Image 1 (cartoon, rainbow, N blue to C red):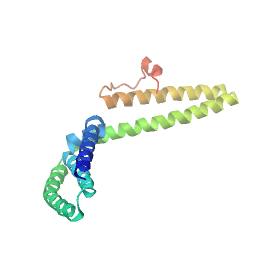
Image 2: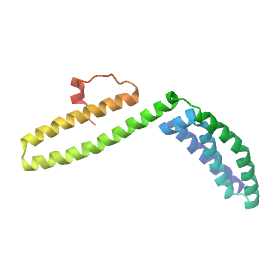
Image 3: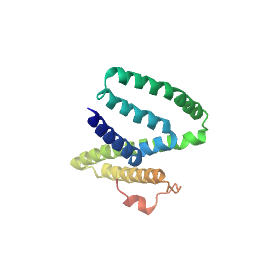
Image 4: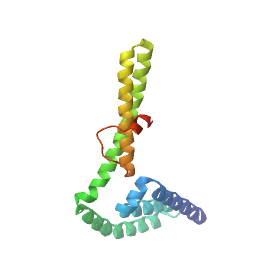
Length: 167
């Protein structure tokens, strides 16, 4: 059972490290909420140990880890509660941009369905309005992508490139 636990621990560590390295939310946790990465990592280790050591030993180790972690977690929460809005704001902005992008995709799908219905009805006036909406939606999405990448350039007027940028 011991070798299986070591192999599972190695696998779990590799998966968790990959998540923290390559997934944006993982990178956010590493940068702003390191204590959560430790809690999840140790939690995974304890879950593996539960299946590989006897229960009483696992219970004792878990109590020791939990007791030592509690003051560290409380310290981290106290420091985070004192963060200024300037630290929290960028995260909220990024989440807002992600929400806008998701809503743009849903809107694009709805516009495509409406455009198809307008084609069936051969309503050229409606088709023209829908094409205008699709262009504007494409512009909104392109600007949100630029904002997410940090390359947003403020302008109320659509640029020529906005009309060529597709989802």
